[in-house]
Length: 389
Image 1 (spheres, rainbow, N blue to C red):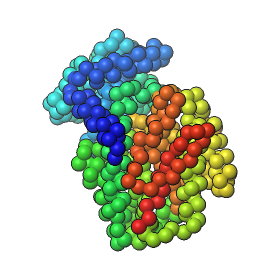
Image 2: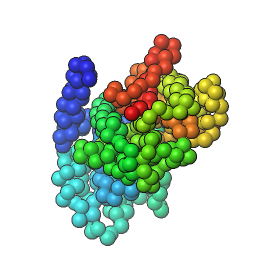
Image 3: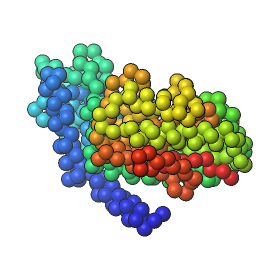
Image 4: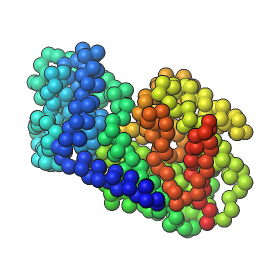
């Protein structure tokens, strides 16, 4: 690691440490920065308030302070936020969770607690506060108006970018280390544990663990671990989350020289990835990006591969905010995280990158591992290659 990189990492770690303290000025400033987006939604939909139950929206609205996850697979938290048009903010908590939420999640955030018995319907409390006004919600609830906060979650704020960089760097380091420690004879379950353990030790939650060995990599696009034993070819494919934000990364190892068709497939995936990154600019649509991938596969001699698996898209408070499709009308904003994942049978390139100020920065680079590079109009786009042992 260069001295410049070490300095950047050190500065980022200090910034994250300062931000992570409860009620810090930077966190409150970010929450305030996001309020106009919420207020505009309330005005446009003529809502008196909005009830947020989903993890991604609670984390976003609280600048990563509140990740009230108990059951890991659950889409909703053990608390809800009630944000009113007049600026008042509440969190709804069952009595058995109230003390911890007050101490560890909402301290210094300016929220008022609304506590009820663990078996009561919290909508009674919501109605008592809002009275007869219309209420929106991000989780389908009878009597409330369903809304989506996905468009509000971009562009990314300065604080979100700092946290994303930290998360990407630490996830990439754990992945690279785990890859170099893989050995023939390990099971896919052991491969999952090898990368998950160091992440969990840093408070990072793995949310996708697709570890695969040998033929299963060629056969399946999403090779969920099933205990196969690694012989010659191994894949670590994961998503990881902290402060509500998520990153994606995939890396491969091959024991002995890989077959030429696999080498060619990786080279083509790197070209598709570079084309997608180069095209990822504010205002481009999902459909236009899909066309970029389609044409790149054709130009590299792998026409039609875009039909066999999604190509990825923006990543943020969920593992993919949207994916590029032939008719997709979503558009990129000026500041977004991206996770393209072009794949050809047995090969894939996947990293988390940042689009900011019209340029691309790959955040999950692993300099200790082999790398490919494609240059488009003078801009170089790196992609990880297979580690050969």
